[in-house]
Length: 200
Ligand SMILES: C[S@@+](CC[C@H](N)C(=O)[O-])C[C@H]1O[C@@H](n2cnc3c(N)ncnc32)[C@H](O)[C@@H]1O
Image (cartoon, rainbow, N blue to C red; front, side, top):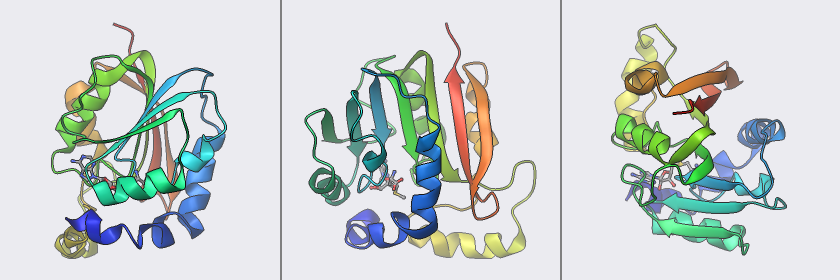
């Protein structure tokens, strides 16, 4: 519902200015191997797809909102891209289907981020990687008072500013290795995180 309303305006805010700079930086250094299978979880309007359009890869892009998916399809149509309406918490892919899973601005949005993360790990191949660009609460610290006040207001807009990345991944820490965890935007409120799925 909320992202149906966001769809017409989303790109003006999150595919421009500081966001596009941060996205560009994330993709600049990503090691995307030719012919790899990549999943975009909660692809939205497809703001990240512009950075991989010219690559020899196979892309699945899922989102719960048909309006957001339509935008992505219209903006970034390519024969190697498949767009599907799907819940990120119940991915309809078999285990280890992807070499890379890209989950930008989704763990702060889905109702159950732990379930979503579990699904992301399940569909990532052994030795594959999970890329995350998202906003999280500061690690090992309580949420600042201002954010506590703003949290319910921001939630009405379809996102949560109070989630701790460390709590989301804790149940799965034996399955992944954190390869990178860096500030990406707004003084580290948004982070770039790269995880490697440990070989079984
Ligand atoms: C903040 S947007 C991020 C979109 C895109 N990844 C980006 O970086 O711009 C969050 C997206 O998650 C989608 N979404 C929300 N809940 C979802 C769910 N349970 N399963 C799949 N997508 C969901 C929304 O429709 C929206 O497109």
